[in-house]
Amino acid sequence: MLSPSLKQAIDGLSLRDKLDVFETIRDSVMPLSEIGFPELSEQQHAELLRRAAKANAHPGTGRSWVEIKARLER
Image (cartoon, rainbow, N blue to C red):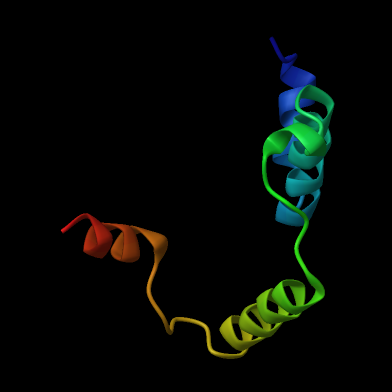
């Protein structure tokens, strides 16, 4: 169980820092070699960066994961 002070410290982190903490804990529990997902290729990494930049440049456009998931489940 997490202590209240640790929970408070985590709550005060930025999203990026919270993701870093998550990745550190995940990797300590399940090493990358056991996760089952290969590393991204350079092209995949570049495409993700391109899409992230496009999303940041045009906030509010596109569809949320909830919308996409609902469409796929139809």
